[in-house]
Amino acid sequence: MADQGCRTKPVRVQPQERVSDEAVLYVSEGTTVVIGARAEDLAQLRSLGADRTVIVADGRAVASPEALVPAQWRAERVRAVEGWLGAFRVFWHESHAVTHADVVVDLTSHPLIQHEVPPFGYVRACSGDRAAAFAEAAAWQGCFRKPRYFTYYAEICAHESFGQTACSRCLDVCDAEAIRSNGTVIVVEPHLCQGCGSCALACPTGALSVAAPSRADLLQNIRQALAKTLGDGSVVRVIELVGLEAVQLAVTDHEVNIAVPALAAFGEELWFAALAAGAKSIVLQPSRRMPKKSLRLLRERIALANTVMQNCGRGEFVIRLASDHEDHAVAWHRTVEQPTGTTSLPVNQAPLKRVLLNEALDALYPSSGTPAALPEGATLGSIDVERDRCVLCSSCARVCPTATIRYEEDARSARLLFLEANCIQCGACARICPTEAIRLSPRLAPSDERSVWREIQADPIALCPSCGAPVMPSRLRTWLQQRAQQLGAGPAIVANTALCRACREAAGVAHD
Image 1 (cartoon, rainbow, N blue to C red):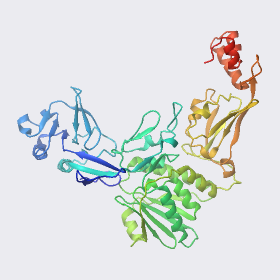
Image 2 (image 1 turned 45 degrees about the vertical axis):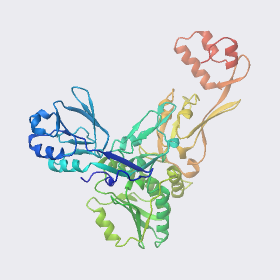
Image 3 (image 1 turned 90 degrees about the horizontal axis):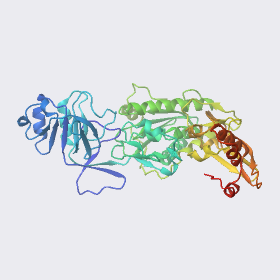
Image 4 (image 1 turned 120 degrees about the vertical axis):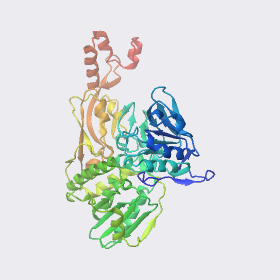
């Protein structure tokens, strides 16, 4: 099989073999659709069809039907392909019919599936080696399994809140197109996920995490390893090794080397935690199979993290990628002849990403410091509320997916409170604000400012002119009356907006 996938290709298993709940199973009976075949492929087509069903798209471009026996042929073109090994759906152009296939061989110069990490069982002849493409297709027959690479905790996902899309960072970075939105939460298709871990690196809350190695396990290894160094600041080198099944760790006097199966599992919360535990710098060494989108995300996160570290007084390039010419496997074996230990990869049970991030930043940034601006795209920051515009409608508090904004009200006053440590800069509050009073402010604030609730707006409660009961914030009542006038409401309707619910009902005025 071709060298496909961010980690390792699925392993062939016997049909009767039991697989764990953490495994993903593919069953392929070998039905193959070939797109873009030419006359020169006849021999390959005949051999491919010896023990399986082979359907040739636009067969007229190859030869007469008799020449393709035992393969089948269809005169029409393929419009689209979706699915994965053992469960592809092929959509035909003219008839709009759908064919179910186990394997798809796309020999066209512009493959129908363009993303960098195609699904297993979808074979492209991108290098022009058509014979190799047929050989790979022939190997995708039988039963296969691979790990379920991710864990997802919907309860802390910030994708949607009260009908508003808040965060879509994971959707933007998946090279395998394995993540989609169903409106309220995101859905990860385990058959498409190939374990690059970019979603975990992008996710600001930890809702999406790499299943193994767990964040807690990696943190424990790093802290124990740093304790064995000389203590004057060591380099932590994290190396991505495709095919690795256990974390490998090696420690010298001044360097901690850790090999992981997915570099994105060692995200920014662990970079900061390692620096807070005494590391001098972090060197990240991706494999050459890391998808381009994942590598671009990694560079962006490193740039943001270095801005944070610079504001913490730790220098400009504390976290960096290894040199492009440096081979990851050679570097690992050069620095570590015999790894000093291995650690099993337990499934992540604790989505503590934001907790670890805040604890590390509290240790790194002095409580007496002043807030430092961060670039757009940071997941740290505050909001600026224009008090003259904010009417305390509380829409921002209702829509905030991380409970960063809180609305409180009693008989005398109403107020909005903000906890900066929770803010992921998703922008949902700014988008829903009816008066456009909120702006995002990406920044790094000292711990004593980040970890306490602070008031961002307050207003007295307006009383019902009929019975004296508390109704709503005064600013909100004034704004609602102005809006009613702008929409052409008469004086009676405008006046009724000031009444409490009971008085409105008594007066026979609808209150919804």
